[in-house]
Amino acid sequence: MTAHEAPGADPTGRDRISRIRLSRTHLPLATPISDAKVLTGRQRPMTEVVFLFAEITTSDGHEGIGFSYSKRAGGPGLYAHAVEIAPVLLGEDPNDIGRLWTKLVWAGASVGRSGLATQAVAAFDIALWDLKARRAGLPLAKLLGAHRDSVRCYNTSGGFLHTPTAQVLENATATLAAGIGGIKIKVGDPERGADLRRVAAVREHVGDGVPLMVDANQQWDRPTAQRMGRALEEFDLTWIEEPLDAYDAEGHAALAASLDTPVASGEMLASVAEHWELIRHRSVDVIQPDAPRVGGITQFLKLAALADHHQLQLAPHFAMEIHLHLAAAYPHEPWVEHFDWLEPLFTERLRTGDGRMHVPDRPGLGITLTEQARLWTRASHDVSAR
Image (tube, rainbow, N blue to C red; front, side, top):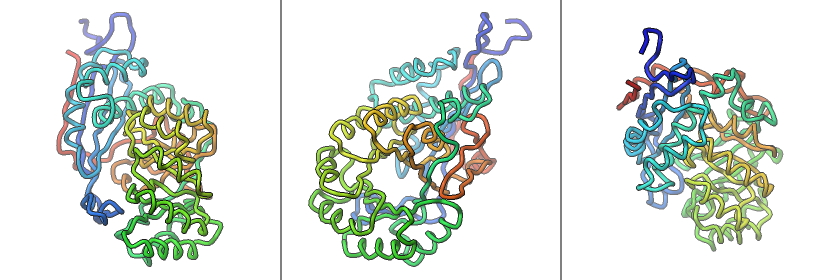
């Protein structure tokens, strides 16, 4: 190797992946978070979110960052799987994102091509798309082919079930004042009357013209979902989210066909194939994929094409730093979910106004990690070409 050649350089002059840094970062939450899964005893309150960050560098000095995450459990598993499969990327052309996704998945295919395995792959995939857009000098939305420069947005973080109704109302006021367009609150209280009183209070507080969504987090059975769906019709909801178990495609289909209120689901599914079950059964009016959960941007784009073909609304789950770009590239007017939880991790802020979130003009995803994020990192691993 000559003095001017970087490690991992290709003799043909093509750019190659030369270094990968993986980090497991634990983001603490100021207040333990409870939704219906806590009230039904299936989960404990959430106190942190664990992130898997992948930072990829090429022999020409280009960089990209991507992430996946886990709530309550699984973070160390994501990180361990990523450490094992990362070496297969060294020396590869970073442009070949589709081929590299397949290579990563098959490197760990003995533990499956869904769930934790593909969520680990997602961090690499998102980093490669970020790198490609940065190298092009374009926001990721523009690289993908944006249909709009801003996306309708709604807030979820102010409406969890651990929050008293009076505080939920205050949070809603602050949310709307910040230029966010809609309010989503959690339901699924075992005492159904409490849910109805809570929704009625929020609707009265924000008025009839404000988009309002509810989320039961899969905690209703079919009869309860039917009864609650009918009782909630009067509140003119934008959608009812996860009324049933995420894998109950037939139950969702029957419910969606019987209600005027749109039904939404998909956030807990971890592959395109799992989402296809919802789509082919006509189970949802609003599909809610999560790019870090389905395996990254490569898989999200496949799913978005299916959703577009079937004329579904799109409202990606969580991770607005990624999903803003993907929603902006969806042909039909979508929604993006505003969560302020991740703000301590990133130097940049996303701008909201007039009910919309605006695509930043920074290249790629437009995010860089803060020093605080580095301090919250409990494990890291470097893989470099020799």
